[in-house]
Image (cartoon, rainbow, N blue to C red; front, side, top):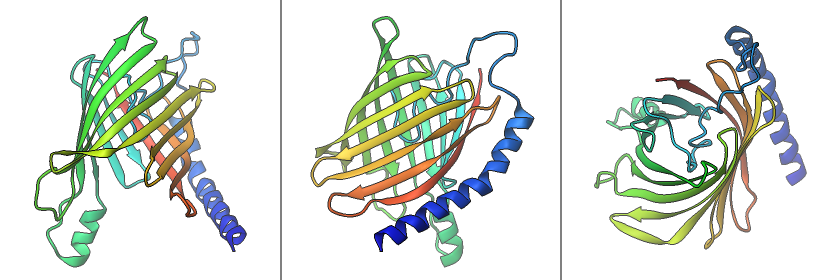
Length: 250
């Protein structure tokens, strides 16, 4: 049964990629290449300040702005207020569909994500200190759930690894269970990059992983990969991951 379920999952992912790929090729053909034809200088990876949902120690430059879509349902906006400080907004729209269906006044879940990025050494080490304050629909207290995070990143913007630790905030109190984070971004070529982010809560063991390939365009960058979520002793749930990034300069 597990083998049959795995086959169905691979077939589903395959059909998603087949259906999605023509749109990727169309975007690439209309947007052009990320690399100048006259130089060999590669621009920085988009979203080097984060991977998908997990932040890195790197920050945005002052005035930079980016939009990211994750699995079609989550939207993230990031703005560099300075070279050391950025602020983000993450929101979803599924609850709005639920409101239309049930005729109840739902509001979408969202979170605010401030972060300070501190370069260490010769710009190869960066320390990111941030927080995430969440608003969940149908709760009595405004933004009563969140996280505080610390992330250490080593490497350049196009090739880096990050390790972090975070603690939950529930009604003003800290959770005793840490959240362990690991992420990496590796530029394979001028148009392709490998990206992964992973998180664990030790006890009870809970983990997630978002891993994929980033296809780099001139203005629009596409993500194709796999999301896995699981609890110790149970089979991990896996879903295809599709997304895009649209950065804006100063």
